[in-house]
Amino acid sequence: MPELPEVETIVRGLSPHLSQLKIKGVKLLYPPLLRGENKSHFERLKGKKILGIRRRGKLILIDFKSGISLLFHLKMTGQLLLVSKSEPLDKHVHFILSFICRDFELRFRDARKFGFLSFFIREAEEPQELKCLGPEPLEVSFSQFLKIFSEHRARLRNLLLNQTVLAGIGNIYANEILFQAGIHPLTLSHSLEKNELWRLWMAMREILKKAIASQGSSIRDYRDPDGSQGNFQSFHKVYGKDGEPCSVCGERIIRLRIGGRSAFLCPRCQRKKIDR
DNA sequence: GGGATTGTTTAAAT
DNA sequence: GATTTAAACAATCC
Image 1 (cartoon, rainbow, N blue to C red):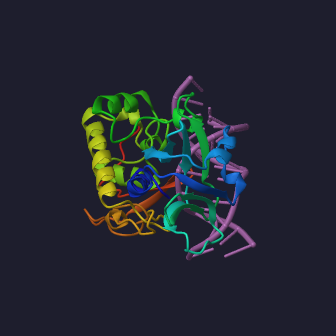
Image 2: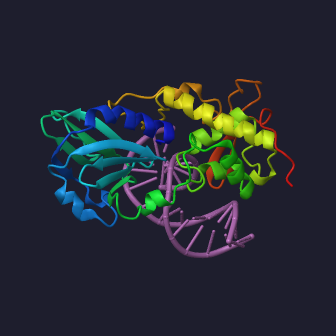
Image 3: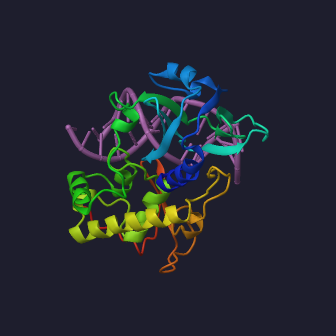
């Protein structure tokens, strides 16, 4: 379940290897993986040079010198692996890029096939997937953050998960951020005091930066391009910890269902405000 | 076998 | 209009 820190780790891992390489071959083993308007660019990838690779929210973008870009969304179980061509394929590999003068290749692997890729032209209008994204959590200023959260009246956990509000936070980090800030996930955003919003903003920055420094969290499927796991899961304080004692106060961590998704919290460290 | 899970979109309900 | 809920998507794990 790659979120911002995992996707950032993947991009940092791929970037030094892929930059300036020329495409030798392309294989699409599961055609429905390719979505969107510009499918024909797929046929014309051969010989194209990679300018660079970057992240936006949870999306991975490979920019080609020709002016087109390839966009990946890993959804829940997608992986981008850089492996030797001699490495045997398994049935979950759906897309392969190979490079001139290199004996490794880039494989898109996704056991559940929720992930996708699509092409877009950088000069043209932004594709829907990019256009609808909110600001980057690590770039948004406190004053912007304050504005966003006071203009909405949704439950904080939902707002943090909403990609049009902030791009890149998923369920793991939404829960960890709220714990770090000491705020209950059901709190309505407009009801927060300025000092609580400051705590939330600081917690968001701190958690995401630490997670990136730990190369993300590996739960179930997440792997970086070398196939190695992240380390941040050992720092999780609430996510998936229901029934365990809180590391701060010893109270049992509980699990709630909010919007059909699990929310984890310490009922003592994250007291519920009376609804207003 | 049933239910939960994961991220996102979409439709329907509040 | 804003927000929440449920369903859908695919496959796996428990």
